[in-house]
Length: 165
Ligand code: HEC
Ligand code: HEC
Image 1: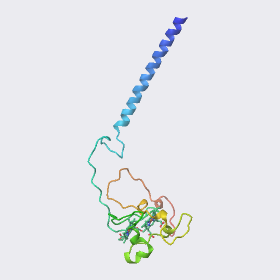
Image 2: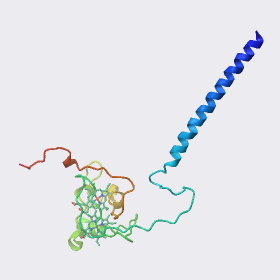
Image 3: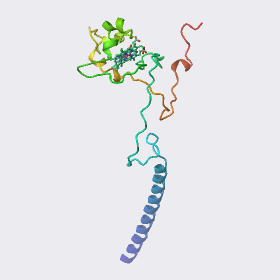
């Protein structure tokens, strides 16, 4: 009796080992397949190797204001901001875009929302939550997107346009 139990345990042990090996092989094959497809944002370069940095892109600085992709999109910056200081003590953007300075600079005024606190309270000066302009407003570079962009303007999604007829 003891002998039989020993042998059946042995066969069960072998079956389990075979199953473990099979699982290991299948798993390795799957991993190898994942590894052969480089992550899209890194590209084919080995991630641990130092490769020369790509040249800096050219900013679009043609001064043409861009159409907004949706009504409350922060408009894109159409001019160079190279070297403009934006710190706690100095805000170069406001020297042109603040209400008091727009007559001289010809720049569009920061919109009324930039003077509101989050509770809708109007302030005399720009609201602290709108102080760091480049948290929302960005310039554009003329480069190939890293991932395909499938954005569809919401006015092309089958809505009836107000005032069309
Ligand atoms: C020397 C003045 C000046 C400075 C400084 C300046 N701007 Fe401008 N900005 C303009 C003018 C003028 C325009 C109108 C378009 C043009 O001529 O480029 C403009 C346009 C813009 C627009 C587009 C608005 C729209 O409705 O399309 C944004 C956004 C903007 N600027 C953000 C910034 C930010 C952010 C900074 C700081 C990093 C900044 N600007 C600094 C003068 C300035
Ligand atoms: C928290 C995000 C945010 C920050 C920070 C911010 N903006 Fe804006 N900005 C927006 C959005 C959203 C709009 C468009 C809707 C609106 O007017 O509120 C806008 C609109 C504008 C416009 C167009 C106004 C018009 O009437 O056409 C200008 C110019 C502008 N911002 C400049 C600035 C400058 C300069 C700063 C820094 C002092 C700044 N913004 C900080 C989000 C931001």
